[in-house]
Image (tube, rainbow, N blue to C red; front, side):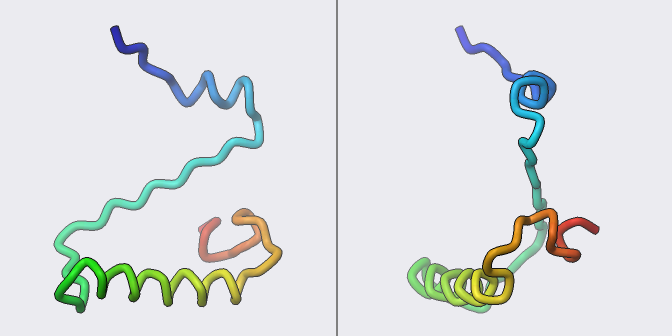
Length: 65
């Protein structure tokens, strides 16, 4: 039998725990294959890591808004 875990249980045990959710609808990436999408996401990930190197998510204004 599956047991459901509530966020409250996590917060009680791990007060620094944070979670983010993004829901995107009707998104059509400008690529034709999974490999192209992987490459595109990889480029953006590298750019983000470079831009915000050494910062916690809570220190990035675009994340905390």
